[in-house]
Image (tube, rainbow, N blue to C red; front, side, top):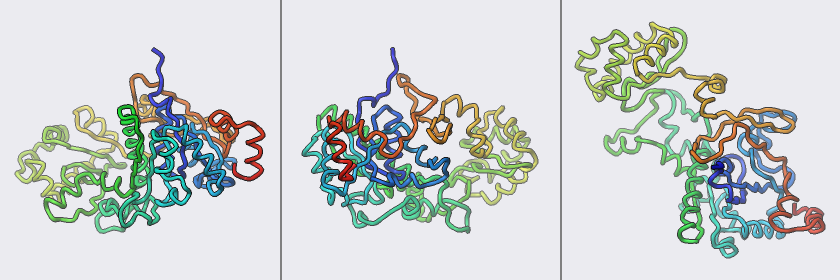
Amino acid sequence: MKKQKPLQNIVVLDLTRVLAGPYCSMILANLGADIIKVERPGSGDDSRSFGPYKNGESAYFVSINRGKRSIVIDLKKEEGKKLVKEFAGKADVILENFRPGTMEKLGLSYEELAKINPGIIYGAVSGFGHTGPYSRKPAYDMIAQSMSGIMSITGEPGKAPVRIGSSIGDIVGGMFLCIGVVSALYDRTITGKGQKVDVAMLDGQIAVLENAIARYSLTGEIPGPLGSRHPSITPFEAFKTKDSWVVIACGNQDIWERFCRVSNREDLLKDPDFSTNELRTSNYQKIKPIMDSLIGQKTTGQWLELLEKNGVPASPINTIDKIIDDPQVKARKMIMNVLQPGMGELHVAGNPVKMSRMLEETVSGNAPRLGQHTDLLLKSYLGYDEDRINALRERNVI
């Protein structure tokens, strides 16, 4: 049977820019959707101006917008708004990440577009969502990280607050938007009706706080940063070895007992302070120096060989260069190549969603030049001829 992608007949009109929205449309593109990326004249997506660059091309932009098609439309002009409405009449999904209220001012709200296409799925991601007292406030990734509380539990105790290394405010928002859009598409197959999907970056960060909310609710203690340590499992953190660092994760009692035996510290099994995970966690200040001293006696390589052989979860702290060449990462096709005009070959992250009947490439489609597909899309989707397209271009609509 010929493999195909599950969303290959879905058309997405993508008005988003920078990261949260484009990340969502990138996932949809990975799953086969046709992404029509609408960009503003002149500068296009803001991320085209984010480095690093090669020959004037942004690696940031390419990494998030590969495999999409670009059309330039001026949404400030009435004719530009009309074009969006025409495309929306033929699309399955429209995505936007403007500040709430912007699409209403443009006359392109969900309510207006649903009059044209009742089956349209309208996906919106914003800092605080389309309801609530903060709805109209501006937001960026770091605002979502800080306001959600996730920064308050990140970093080392007693140190300055630390932003998580990747832009998870944007990325998680984009992921939840994608889940919402795909769910709405499925619902449409049953009801025949479209709907609006409203995702807030703040909501997404709260949703991934894991057990911090439950811990506070149960104990009344406000969680704080713990470095690499797990708040309720011990030992479960990064330890300094003779030459670098190793992460050791004793996630249950059996693993802890195996660790003690293979490290020749069976005496720890007889210590009543360490007999259960709960006691090891409550006696963390006692067990920590013991672990530090023990782990510091061998190199990271020696620990990995010993622990992996005996079923104790452990890992080096890889740098990005090592991940690119990692055999597991390669086996899962999680590093792809983009052959980007003007840049040559560029490594990007692959598709983490593996499906048995989905075609999986090792080379991604490249990112579009600004407005590269404007004429093609106007002709193929809207049936415009050359004269009509040239007239729009003369009036700076496209």
